Image (cartoon, rainbow, N blue to C red; front, side, top):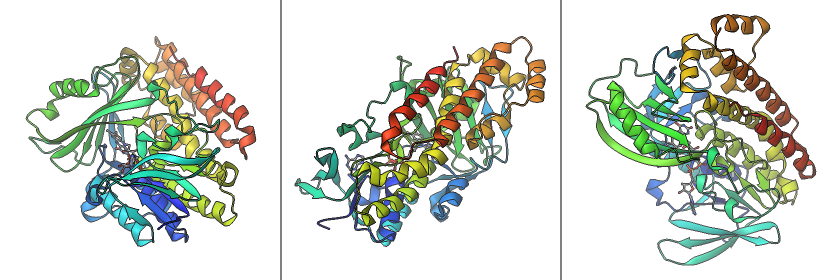
Length: 450
Ligand SMILES: Cc1cc2nc3c(=O)[nH]c(=O)nc-3n(C[C@H](O)[C@H](O)[C@H](O)COP(=O)(O)OP(=O)(O)OC[C@H]3O[C@@H](n4cnc5c(N)ncnc54)[C@H](O)[C@@H]3O)c2cc1C
């Protein structure tokens, strides 16, 4: 394929779904990844993906060996690991832990079957540009050692956290300086347990504490006697390595005693609102490269797949109208950000709230049920936290002595509402982006709960 319509850099879940949609719509689609063919899909991850994302996109559910285990429910623990919230019927979370390699290979095969041309062992070095317009990519074939330039109408950066295209572009529309506090550094292990799990369908989440300062630890079942467990902490202010925190967690949590290590690796994931613009001139961003990740639990598989479907359709429209500028691609922003994107943005506020609550207050809040399972579910759905007057009174009664915690919760609820509103008013063209961005940054700045 000498002159593709669209080049997609990265064949992770977001890149494969985008490539499939572009190819289905008749575009000449070139998908590139530095991995060998048989390793595409492999990824250090918690492996959990909810059913809701498949229902929203029409992508087939995981099946057969793509599924490690079906997940229904989560127990959320405060730092002292007592008084867990037992969240059940959480439609936005329930789904599966998947075998990332098999699942990723299926997504790749679907893109290839739809007509995308896939080249493995390709290291993309940088975008080609003409002024601000991205016109193609320069890559190195890792097998032959050849350096190659390929031109296209649109380039999609789906290279994950590395964001190899985005990080090399300079334009007022494009953000490439992501705050370390908005990045979760993670370490996870796949472990074979000594004993079967009592509730193998229930995920466990542990907030704060020594195990996960300013973050959380997880135990996601991969089978009756196998788990994916890890720790994610935000990257700023020298908080130590996630691996060292995980090791402490392992030493103090009896479930791990006598377990056998199958695999242990680290990774990073952005936990911020999505990029202010998902497009530039001749370029678009999807998946982790676009910061499309749930800021409270770091789930990005579904958020990126949802975006990939929209992006494929927008690239098709921009090519049909021969307008590959940021303006021509803008409807990717207006279709994603005021919808699923707004949920991610308001969850950034909730993340900031959770991070600011001391361990002692968090333990108290769980004990007195100042934070309820419904709050977590509503916040995650993007409905915000709706604290009615009666609701507030009940909680004030339960939380007498820790009014400051309730006030923080109320402040978070208000800011989440504001963020939702700002995203519903996302500008229809690039000209008004600056004003909109100021509003959003103002809300983020107010989200200090110290
Ligand atoms: C420890 C951890 C736990 C997580 N747990 C969960 C979870 O339980 N559920 C969930 O939904 N999400 C989870 N996430 C997040 C999730 O893994 C990501 O959001 C998701 O995989 C992002 O998909 P992507 O396609 O954007 O990027 P990736 O899957 O990272 O794919 C990017 C692709 O680009 C390729 N690439 C990169 N650079 C180049 C280059 N220069 N040239 C060519 N190719 C390149 C890579 O080889 C890769 O194949 C977790 C993340 C981490 C780190």
